[in-house]
Image (cartoon, rainbow over all chains, first blue to last red; front, side, top):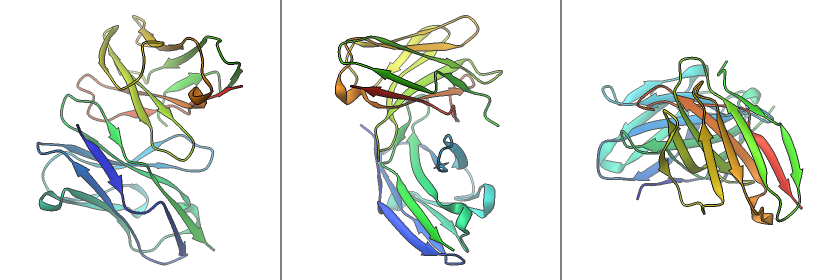
Length: 112
Length: 112
C-alpha cells in the first residue's frame, strides 16, 4: 500500500527566509504527486502537481517542487516566504487509477 | 475557485445518531471522493463515486456509506456515530480519470 511521509510537523520561519518541506512516498510504480495548501479557515487548494516530464515543477504563489525518483521524494520549496504563506501543507500521491494518499501535513508559521 | 460546495458547514450529533453530509461537485466533474480529516492529520480516503457507483474504498467500516446522484452530487452517510467520528469531512471532485482533485470547504462534524 502507498504511504506518504512528511519530514516536519511544524516549521517556523521568519519572513524572507527560504523554505523546503520534505515529502517521501512509498510506491514502486508510476505516481502522480501533489502539494496542497490549507490556509487557516479555508479549504484545501492545489499548489502544484507532477505527472511526468520535467521533474522541477512550478506552482502558484512562487512555490516549486522537485521530483527525485531515486529518492522517492517530492520536496516543496520557496525562495522567500511571506507571512501570508502561514498554512498547513500536504503532500499527496496517487498511482494512476488509484486513490489519493495524503501525508500527515506540515504546519508552516511565518513570523512577520 | 474550486466550485465544490458542501453542506452543512458544521454539525453536532450525539453518539449513536446518524448523519448525512452533502456535496456538489465542480461543473464538468463526474467523480467525487470523500475524506475524513481528524484534527492535526492529513485527509484519509473514505471512498470514491464514479457514475453513481462506488469506485474504491479506504479502511472505513460499512457504517460509512455513500451515494452519487445523476447530477454527480453526492452524499456521505454515517450510521451509529462514535466519538472518534468527530472530524472535518472533505469532498473532492475530479474529471473522469481523477488525476487532480478539487476540494470543498468541508463539514465539521462533532460527536458528543
